[in-house]
Image (cartoon, rainbow, N blue to C red; front, side):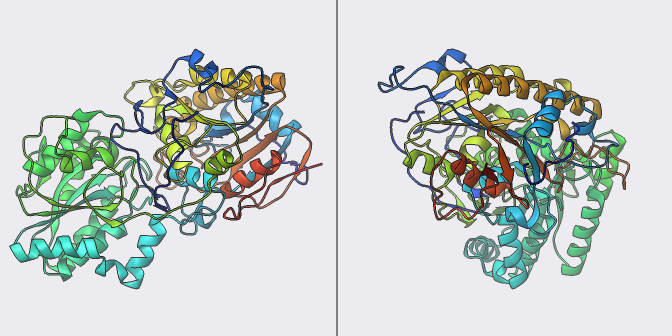
Length: 574
């Protein structure tokens, strides 16, 4: 996509209303049992449909077609679609995107920030989908758990955390082990390795003699083969403390599944509970070298036991150090759910399990950093104003346009519908870069023409999900598929007199090669993202960020902005 010269200065009805849950930063309460994609994902939301287009035209609770057809304001979020002036290895720039090029040229357009301090992350930290959607929906900067926990470590408060201390002390008193698991990565998307090192140090200082680290390898939010530097840091920590060691290693592909692929999760579970893996190694460095020799990047490293077996036993403590919920839920349920049915568990040790943040409201175990309330998100405010809204995406990003966008609300608001399109069942999305974008667009166009909705929120996952594979040609095809769909969407809006804001939650596909390492770049970026307003003539305010989008939408609709929203309207109508 050639974004073109910026025109600066122009630029479900529910059976019950939602009840607020608690939220702080991106520690939003994930939905009850059933994973992100299931039809009963939002148990109190009666109008979630999977793939049938006619369902979008059904009018529950006596809605009359004789009412004036609505002209919707659509927010299209092109996931993983950043803007870079560098053309090389830039799938967004290389893609043929005539529709977006025309829209950026002929309508008000600019760039906005989706990373760092502007979304409540540390300065320079790349954004991510969860953080982006929380900020967009909140209409204010929402400070993230990465920032909160890092600050607690710096201030020393982390080492006095009640739930963490309780679990460690109980293990020490009984002479039991402290197991720590989590994504060993500096990426800061699902975890941060500094948090894990802080937990290891805390366990050692409180007297734990048996400290075992079960490392999940990243290679997705960081370069594909970058784990060695992290291993060296942890080995140095163990040497300094005189206690603790690596017990196992496995790629996040297995340990952090979020799509009910329980065969993957079982490999991680058996590795940790039984101390049995497909491979063994004397050290973490040796395990990683062997994985690379098998041509396994970090994300896909197979289950490897390190050193003597350290199976989990009754009375041991297990601390899960991921702070992001979506990829932490399945493995957590395998450990704590008494009625777990994902796979047959060979061992079910009675563990003192602590989740760093709350992964789901119905996961009944200790939580070190429980969430607090976030009030008057865009979805809640639209409901209070009597407006109807639709949330729609593929499986991969459905949670983001619903649960995260609503600030951790598990139920839909009055007048809110939700539509989910199944993402293709392929091993990696470079094998089908268009994903289910055409089917998603069929449903979106149907919703636009239905006259039913005041607001529609839609996410196209392609740029992010294919960008994560590191396959340049596939990422180009993904961007072209999204552009084609954008053309269909704006055509439908023009037909009914609707409007559209087109943006992204963070960058990814615009940088497909890491110039420093020479490896494929599979992570997000901290680059700006586009914002295009397909609608009336307007001037654009500069210096925008994701949290400005909700106030912008409300202003375009002629609605008041709630006082909790501190973002600024970016589009000023002429």
